[in-house]
Length: 208
Image 1 (tube, one colour):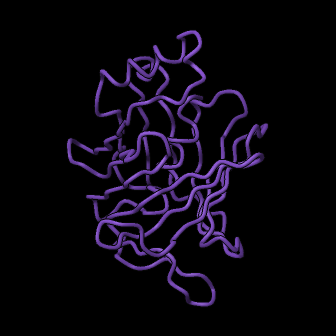
Image 2: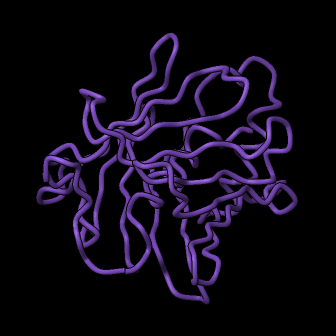
Image 3: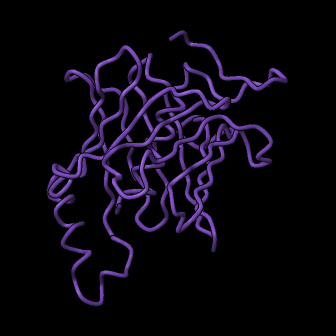
C-alpha cells in the first residue's frame, strides 16, 4: 500500500496513509455514540479527519465512518457478520462498500485479557491485547462489584497491536473519565481506515 491520501470525489484529502498519530474523542448522546478522530498537531488534536457514528442498541452492529461532521461523504465503516455470534467478526469496508479488512474479538482469550485480531488481504494477522494484565483482570472484577459496577471504570487502559512480534499500532486511553484516546501507528502498510475502525471497536464493543 502506498502512502497516498484517501480522497473523496471532489479531491479533498481526508486521511493520509502516511498519518502516524491520531487522537480519538468519544461523545455520547441519547441515540448514538459519536467519535471524532483528529490528526496530530504537535501532540494535540489537529484537523478533523474522521467522524464516526454508532447507533446504540442496534439489532445488528453497523458503524459508519464519515470524512467530517457534515456526514456528506463516507470514508469507511464496519458491520457485524452475524447478529448473535459476534466472534464471527466484523467486515471493514471502504466508502464504496468494498472490503478492506476484517476484525474479530477472541472471546476465549478475552476472558482474562481482551484480545482482538485484525486481518488485511495478503498480510499476516495483527493481534491486539490489553497492555496491563492486572488492569485487564480488574476491569472484569469491577463489572461484578455491587454498587460500583455502574460507575465508569476509573483506570486508564491501553491496547498494543502487533504482527509477527513487530508493533503495528497502539490505542492508549489518555484521560481518567472522558474517553480520549491516542492512536500511534508504527506500521506503514496497515490501512489507516482499518486502524480507526478497530480503535472505535476497542471502545464501543469492549463489553460485547
